[in-house]
Length: 181
Image (cartoon, rainbow, N blue to C red; front, side, top):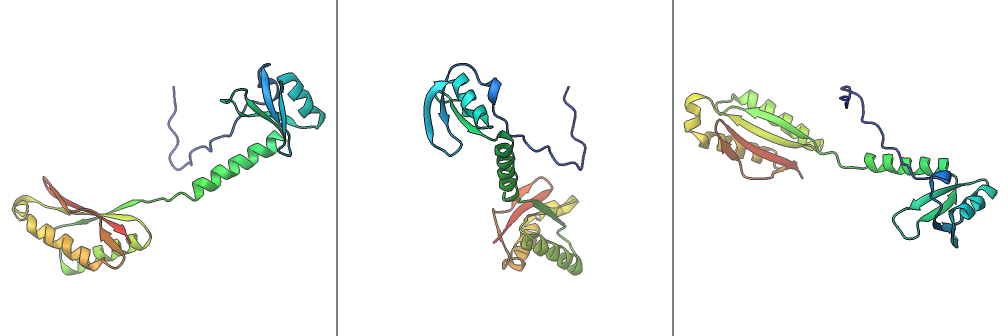
């Protein structure tokens, strides 16, 4: 049974693994030396002996090729470097979050300004903003008021963000997404 991850804990770092030394079968392998030179196709036992003579590990780097490619290298150092590359790649990923700003058609001036400032702040931080206009009761009969509110918000945040799609009116809500410029 799989246990759920505790909230607030980062996901575990994916480990880099490869078959090494005795895990590699006894068939022929293509051996690459630690300096990158090709040593040719030989049995796995000969390749292991070559690696052990130099105080290195025999690491299978391309299992899918025929014959499999193995390299004589320090496995611990290689694995550390590969995991470092994975962490760096994860750090450089673009993290786009979606923030919400909830509005009502009969919003007061100060409340609108506060919501507008929140949307500006989110867009400046690089997040997308989902503007939701909630309609209650008879307000649903006047969707043009919600559309006017979204148009006003679009004009106010136009310097830092742009409307990603046309506003969508579904049942009691009108939704529009703003993306940072």
